[in-house]
Amino acid sequence: MRLKWPAVGVFVLTVWLMGPMAVFALSLDEAKAKGLVGEKANGYLGVVVPGNPEAQALSNDINEKRRQAYQDIARREKTNLRTVETLAGEKAIEKTKPGNFVEGPGGWMKK
Image 1 (spheres, rainbow, N blue to C red):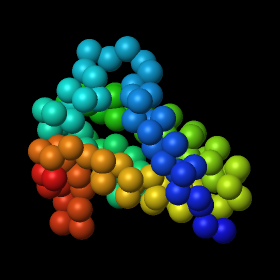
Image 2 (cartoon, rainbow, N blue to C red; image 1 turned 120 degrees about the vertical axis):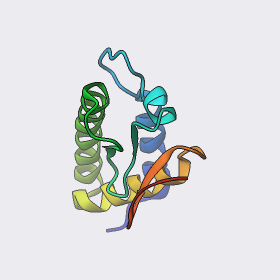
Image 3 (cartoon, rainbow, N blue to C red; image 1 turned 30 degrees about the vertical axis):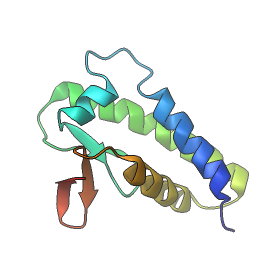
């Protein structure tokens, strides 16, 4: 079954606005602007340069929330998790600001 784009669009917007719910010294926007994290095609956030504990904690927190949201959507839409993750990843990369990182087939690159 194919997901309806409006449902995925609303979800992606919600995740975007939700940002990190836990209190971190580093916000998602700051981490992206500093090149510490970037969007991946699988719908999750990745750490661009390993070794930054704040960026890793932020990424882990956001990815857990995304996974929960993706599972809810997959259940509701009666589709598999991978389909939701892939669609969300496409939208997240599409909405990534120029100069921020996205992960491509060859690794991390600036959009």
